Image (cartoon, rainbow, N blue to C red; front, side, top):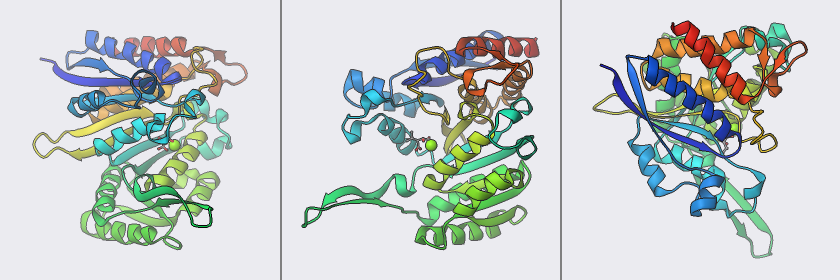
Length: 372
Ligand code: IPM
Ligand code: MG
């Protein structure tokens, strides 16, 4: 008997809509072919498209669906047409509400360089070939959510903007455990990146991660690295890293940097996970590409669907216990790249340029072949 899972699709804006359509093709494939799992999908709006229809970047109704589902697949949000929308309704607010209300504190951002793409990287082939880093970004605390967060007018008429970086022991401890657990299944190394030389939260991060390491994971190698040095080392010698554990803001920046080393932002998936449920052991989860809505190419069929498809592979692995199916999707991506198919963002001389749908179909064909 196949297990039935509920999936909420939130394609959002811009290229999110096009790349999610390719994931729907994959879902239909598994529903037809797999005897292990069946996916029931629902869809809703988020971001600018939700604002245009409902005046908010995500409705309470969509939030209810997200809370009730087994996993959320998220596309991308934003675009210049919403630049003037009130701050609390800007497209990104919908994404941040999902992260916060589902308590998705653990953001896993793998940066893997497919061999076929080593020359598309801004770095030299020998630096990135075989690269396999996992950035573990804390996602529900720090500068993104700390209060006060405001712009106030001072008595002299000048304005003052304030963001607040706050972390508690519990918040750091739980994300550190996720990083150590992942490292054990990889190369057993965690770099904790923070600014303990300037920030009190940095001091706390270093202390708590050290204590958690001692109590929970003394078998894993732990290194502390200043976040700015980490940014530099990622360019100098990226393969020295295995798992990079860091806060919300540094994680945002370091993961864009790591993504670019793999050839294109269009390649990088992510998983955002909550704590395991006390009864079922299941984690709330949302899967999304690291790239944004790319308004410049939206609606033209040019977007690279690989990051969104690879995010679905992460959903298979982390939410549905379908690790071997996830491996197959990833193998299918790699072999389509080996065959020379490229979307514009990863195009190289001598390769075959394809659009979003062609790339999605080619991956599906390869998957069909691997599954036969
Ligand atoms: C990301 C994005 C988001 C973030 C934006 C869209 C709010 O850059 O997921 O990395 O800053 O977290
Ligand atoms: Mg970002």
